[in-house]
Length: 333
Image (cartoon, rainbow, N blue to C red):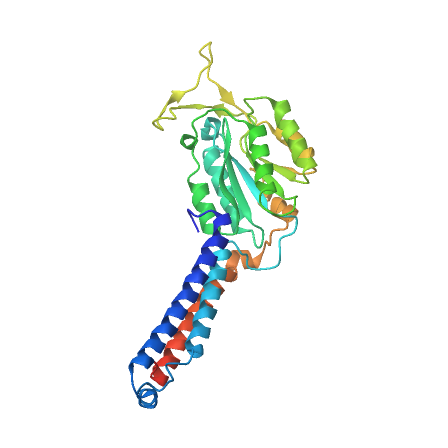
């Protein structure tokens, strides 16, 4: 349900049901008007095979049942495929600062972060995931959802040019994630997974304070360090054009080198009882998903079960298909 706010879905579903009910009522009224226009009701009944003055229950009930199924699909585009999630939803805090363009991990840090985020989404069963992107400020890309396709689309769009303020405000990202979890209606709790190099350009103490806020809200923060201790030169990115022109230099003309700050990231996660892992650890995603209750294993890799909203839509289609076949056999108007 891209482009439609989740809190508007109940309204849309309700309006849809009202329209269907109105359509059924209009259909019944038209039948009665036709019946009244014919002088001999017995003759009309013989011609059409039905009493047009009676309410068309055999058509109304399937139509309304299909409408309820469709409304259910509209209401729940983020339903999962299995048991309820343990520990509440998960919000990924993804770094889109300029330092993520450093290529000290083989690919660019940004590309490795995308791959890890996609892997985590693939391994998630019944746990809804949200996305917050951050650089000099933080903003929500997606509220917690189980729509893996939409989540991956947002992950693919990650780039420093999507923000207008450079920097790396870890504290702002954590606070935004906590706010997103609090507004999810999950009754508190949940998990934050912060990806990035930990190259805090604001106030590290403010980031620690934000982690304490998360802990006080019952939120667990895990961190994933993306980068190496040796680091690499930071490309000079023009945010307005997206062009890279050389590398950033300090006032003395020396190249600015960004190194992963595992110490700060580990400190942040420890504030909430979370863990810190390195992106270089091939078991990093396994360790993370094991912490927040994702369903990891054969089902996730070989193809998850059909989402409930898809079953509802299929049910609506089958109901209408069967009703049409039945109507044709009864020669209904």
